Amino acid sequence: MRVRGGCAILWRQQGVSQIGTSPGRRTIVSDLSLAEQRLLDEFARNLETTGVYRAARRSRVPVARARQIVADLERQGVLVASATSELGGADGVYWDRLGADAKGRGAVLSQAVLAVHGVSALAQEAALWLAEAGVGTILSTRSPQDGGLAPLLSARFPALRTRAPLRTRP
Image 1 (tube, rainbow, N blue to C red):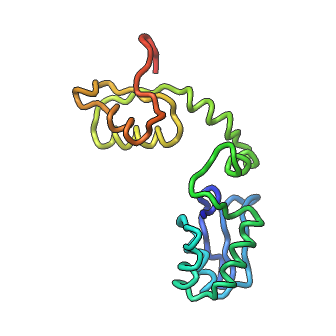
Image 2 (image 1 turned 135 degrees about the horizontal axis):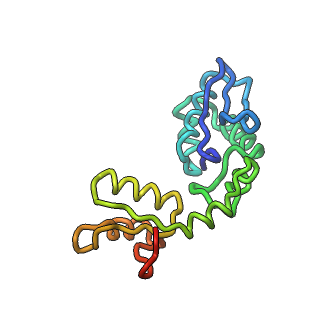
Image 3 (image 1 turned 45 degrees about the horizontal axis):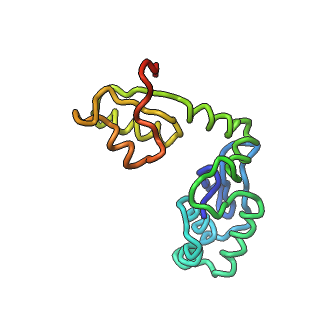
């Protein structure tokens, strides 16, 4: 279970928390005790199904009340059961409502071809972030035998292409 879109959980004042910062998309939860606000803070990280029980115990909220809060947030579309985002699923609907064409963005990114020069820590980190963002092909200016990025990228993102046809321009 996780907060949709990785939205921030903010304390507006004692007893009132806000999930998300976008004016039209934020959710305000009020009439909370201090312990219940701490429980909401626990939702900032991914929780397993049994994690609600543990989070309730850590924040000293009765489990029945914690489950009620979770049910309310799920009904409002703030919490989703999956641990990862799916562009075709509820997250895609969420981003589409924000005006971002999630499917179109995903299609464009999957066709994108980028080249990364060098194998420094910065180049590796940038390549990993680009792969995670959905870029379809990432080329390295060094061959795998010379310490290029292909083995690292292929190990973490098996669907990522690290080679392209001759004369492909990144």
